[in-house]
Length: 242
Length: 173
Image 1 (cartoon, rainbow over the protein chains, first blue to last red):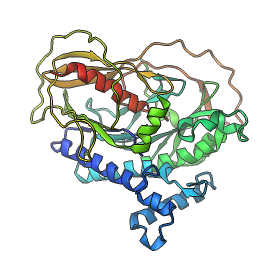
Image 2 (cartoon, rainbow over the protein chains, first blue to last red; image 1 turned 180 degrees about the horizontal axis):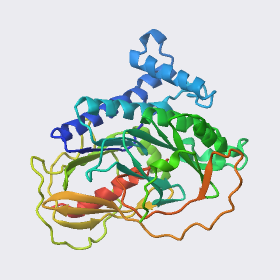
Image 3 (cartoon, chains in turn yellow, red; image 1 turned 90 degrees about the horizontal axis):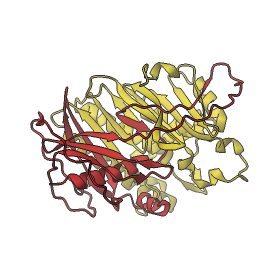
């Protein structure tokens, strides 16, 4: 992963130890699943490591990837150029695992954010649901939406993840280039992340896919600076905008 | 900048670790954990010290700057911060810029704020009819609000850390 991670904990006596444990956990996840690390388990698997040597956790994660591929009719696919890269699922999965570990410490009010994906629990320091801004993909120091969320996951997929080839005007699938970002709210960050990844791959039809999923809402921004959102999305929007 | 960011992603080495507490209704502990090799993008003159009230936090350690356990470049010394309000340098978040303002009170970080720059509203766009009647559409509209965190598809959080680092460097006693 190699991305910055932010953890905020409210009113817990062991907050600093819990935060350190969270960072240690992400370090371990990165060591195992990063395709940029030559000695990671996933790199060894891509190098031909025999299946009986795969760890139990890796098998479970790859099973989740296969399940997500089914659930998204193939739009979620971890195989690229003959190699496996589960990072589209591991990020949300790892945040959710880390959140679970904080809840096991009886920590109730926190958020964990990694690479723009967030799991929020409980209330912020002001005693209110966590206030989350959706970044303007056209202007990074702007927010285009303010959400109030507790006990859910928020993931945003965008062209950054797919790389610069998205901007190639000769790309065969022009529908993908028209979606700048897709934010998905789901029951937890694992679910939100895997469906945000797949829905983004569907281009402008992705938001309609999110609409079909009970318990999920989405906010899609296209290259015309127009947002399309699901029918239940507004209940998360902050009521008063300053 | 793009190449530098790829290198950071490629190595994913642990770098700077921040922790601070916030004494208001409750104690908030936040830490940001970033790949090493983070370069502070220069310093800006601070906006001057402000009168500060003493922090009510208890049982908290001084904010530490330095490496975490997995080994990285910066040293592991703790340091205290001078009271005041400090503005980090503008950091490139690839699609745009981020600037962070840090407030130190009682030697501890008491507030971190994204500086928002007002911008013209996007021109109203022709909104196409959607085939799916359940979906709704709207033009993007900039919001002016302080939020707890931001969701986005970029490495903007890395730019946040860069700007935060620059601000904290000014604040060190």
